[in-house]
Each structure stands twice: as C-alpha cells, then as structure tokens.
Length: 197
Image (cartoon, rainbow, N blue to C red; front, side, top):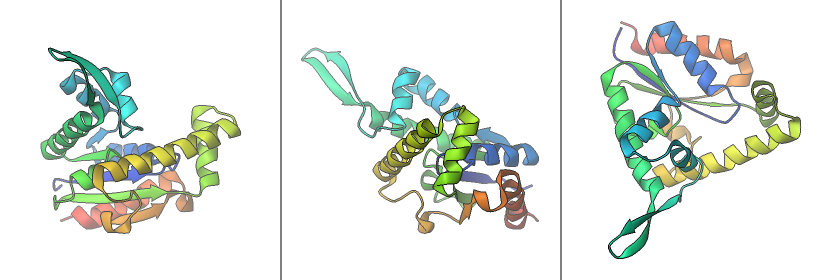
C-alpha cells in the first residue's frame, strides 16, 4: 500500500477519534490523537497541563525569570511551533491517521494526504458526549459549546482560516448520516479508491 496520511478534523462529539481509530486499525497504520500532546510535552519540557491548556486558549502565557526580572512568554506560540514539527515528523515517518491539531493545514502541501472533516447535528453531538463521558445533558451541552468556540478560535489563530472551510478539506461528512462505524467503512472505501493501485 502507498504511503498515506489521513487527517481527521472534527466537531466535538462527532466521533472523529473513534472513526479515526477504526480506520487506523483496519489499515494497520499508526494512530495519533493525544500522543501529539505527549510528544510536545517531551520536546518543550513544559508541563502537560500547560500544553493542554494551549489546546483551548490561543494566548497562554507563563512567567520566566531573567536577569532583567520576570518576563511573560507566549507559550501557545512555542507549543504551536513544536506541534507543527511533530506532526510533520509523524507524517513523514509512516502512514498514519492524525486527529485534529490543524494537521490538515500543517500537511496541506503533501500530495499523500487525505483531509477529512467530520461534523454532526448539535443534538447528536450532545447525546454522544453524554454517553461517552457520562455527563448530564446540561453538562454535555456546555462542554460541546465550550469546545466549539475554543476550537474555532484556536484553528483560526493557528491557520488564519476556519475549521469547516471546504477549501481546506477533501471531504466534509456528517457522521450522523451513517453512524460512526459505517462512516469509517465509507471512508475506508474512499481511501482504497484514493490510494489503491
């Protein structure tokens, strides 16, 4: 099989990580989701909590002591730089599925990349979050709204474009149309057509 990189951007609760895992397992290729945070933590030497905070805040600052007194550095920019580098390394190393992290934008020049964006109706996403995270409806609704807002801001900050913009993706797909497993199977067919001999 040819070298391939599948990037899956998704709305929170639309099943991106689950669908991506299904695809990676079916193809026997690497799967990267939270692993990227671990690699960034390792390379920056910054605490995991601070790195994860940059996932939802485009302006995380931290204090460092210098000979001129305390200075505040924008940690978000440092994490973004390392994240871009880590994602490029992962894509170069082997075929893989990468969830989120602006991978579609970071790898936009690669010819072996299929850029997918998954969305679903808000109500469907709320129900998914309730089930997966064992939350009340009110908690799930707040979490979906929180992530929707923050992920849009972060993507715009990192790329200058919008997450669901069709010009940034090869395919936009409503994961509620077929359900997560059938959506994964549909994408596997597309991958076979795209990368097959």
